[in-house]
Image (cartoon, rainbow, N blue to C red; front, side, top):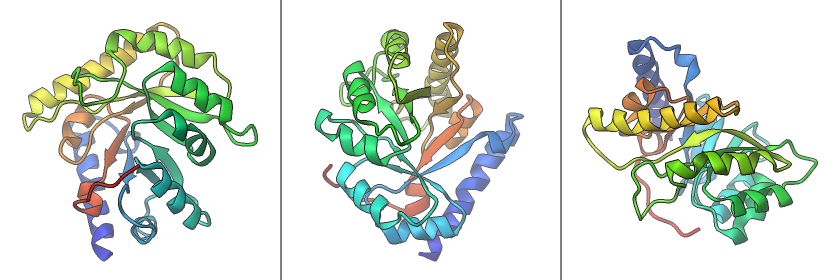
Length: 231
């Protein structure tokens, strides 16, 4: 478990270096530790090393973990595809949702978000690479979705999220992230106050930061390789 703390500091150093290289304040880039498939002990270790925000993909696994760690001051982000029948546990347990890609899901989340809780902070997931295997709204449809979300109670639209096509070429990586940034700017110009660009993972932190990421989602570089689990 000590390795998690070491890895966490190494990732934070990568973020800080990347930010300084492009003239940004390292504090303007938040780190979301993606703890999916790792147990509560791994999250406790990361928290002890100074991490407070955690991302999860699998609903039941996440709810069990959130319950087990309820005594800790953690912020939980749901970052996986959302099935209609999973909207209630997501709305009742998470602080953020990054993966809204259709209005129906947003409406369900708004309907079941407890009024005793703060509004659910949400991002629209955009399928920048138009990949059949990935979730996300088409870029051309993102503004209409933003307008729909803005009418819903108990949701606060914060920005955009994307998982671009994998590439080892930093120029290609930056191109995809720049596309998401431009889309954010277009939606903002239509009257939306968007402060979040959730983009960048273990392999492309530097490219994401260079193109304006405000939150990077990092799992493998912190917790190590993971095994696939069911939702």
